[in-house]
Length: 260
Length: 260
DNA sequence: GTCTATAAGAGGATAGAC
DNA sequence: GTCTATCCTCTTATAGAC
Image 1: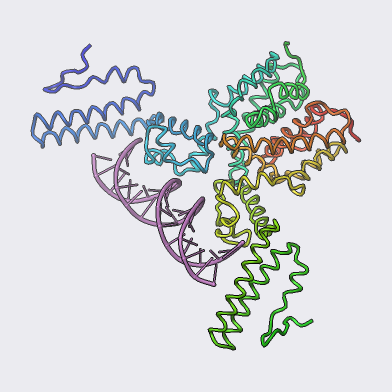
Image 2: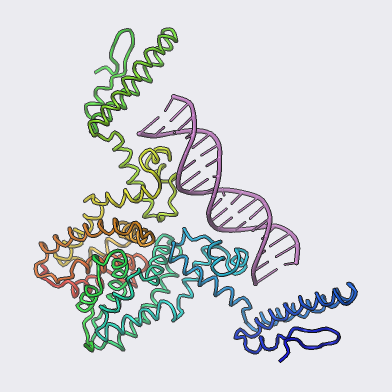
């Protein structure tokens, strides 16, 4: 398959493939159109007069603008990729260095962007943090982790699981602590952050009810407190908390039937 | 009692009372001597020739210097008061805003000093933090808190105690979390900080063994994790953890005889 | 939407007077 | 030992080109 296509007198790069396989739909098509515009401009400038080039460029720009408007109307978010990558980088750096010590330059760099891109998507550093907290719902991050813990408990392999998971301090737990501290120090944020924590708590509660029949009334709280704090202590020193100790403690606190 | 004393032709402010009642001994005397020197200098300048004043000042300066040397030789720390006040202010601000967000200017101001005073006692901000961690042993702060918790548990009043203690997020717990995060993010500090935590853990363990006969093997870990994390959750929202929930959970985890 | 450049200010640390 | 003044770097945020 040729990677260009003839149109009028110009060779057009073929973007249709990119468009077809790209998952973000309109946004990706928009991006492709803008790239095509740039390439076309170059070709025009080389082969014809500047006045013609200007007309063509202007027409394509209009097309781009209306596409953008249509995209927004359709409720799509053409910045989804960049936004997601920034959030991911922010999560990593807030975990690694803490909210205050992580700079926006570092975050942008890790996301393969610059600070300007961050401010195109978020109003401020605090807004970035709050967006991160709100979208913590992603089952690929925190939630999957806690599911694993519940399963390990049910299967009687929690001790091994913890020893393996927290040889280095569990990143998810550290981020969760960072968020907790962030909210506790900003009374005006507490309510909103609390709702996110409550939502997570209730999801975990449902899993426990399903996976651990006969679990104690406060089993959720036991998981949240013992596993989280235990991970941090274990990260500081195995002498302070090891997998066996955490598993034994959790066993007393949670009760219910396990499979070992 | 007059507040000045005649010596030669000058009126000397009477510092002996200050010296006698001041608890830091040599250091206070030294301070008083320096103040006296300053006052004497003024008087001298006013009443006699500048050359005489210079001689007197020089002599007193020598006296001050040798006193200072003697003080150091005796193993005294003349900066004890300032140092303690700086540490106290640092603890408060590290709790309130976090290590990174708390500035040395703020800390100095809260301690009634300036940044220069901090650098006279600590090499860097990190050195200040480490000193704070090492000297966390003070029974008036963290330790007293955990003792109270154990007693409340033993007396069956933990639920009420927690509800009262964590209406605002427990400052001691937040500081402890800040220190934990600080150490986890600085691998080279982990070992030393871990030793401090272990020391505290063992002290608490002894108290539990004494106060709660028949407590479970991992009772210490239960107190450390459930009460600490529970306090933070409770500080975020009572819906997330309240005194009754924490007390009930701790009861299952710890076991042993209580008095209610 | 993203980049570069820059403004504006804060923070840790040091120097020197007293 | 403490203070004042200063240095230098880093940081958040904005402006303007593309």
